[in-house]
Length: 109
Image (cartoon, rainbow, N blue to C red):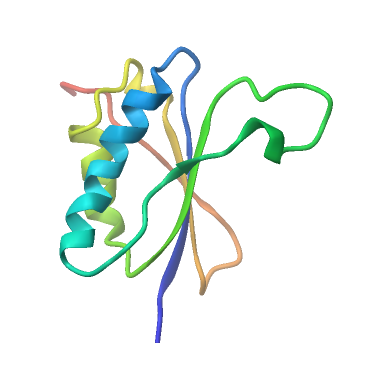
């Protein structure tokens, strides 16, 4: 039995995507220690259609038994976003047809 959560993180323009991706994936490194493999990957620019480049990075992953509240806390507290209020997190579990949109609180708020 599984409970899959699909996750997309829309990263604000100007972020150091390599550093933010490393910080996001620190959450999944802890999960690996408990037997849950996987991490978030940045969507490769050549993996999209159209004739223009995306204007922001997208981090994407699918995870079994993701503790969404814990993950959102990690994104809000452990990742050093330049503009946390501009980060958008879309999540769709296997039981749902629609994506839920989450915004991070401004740091210090």
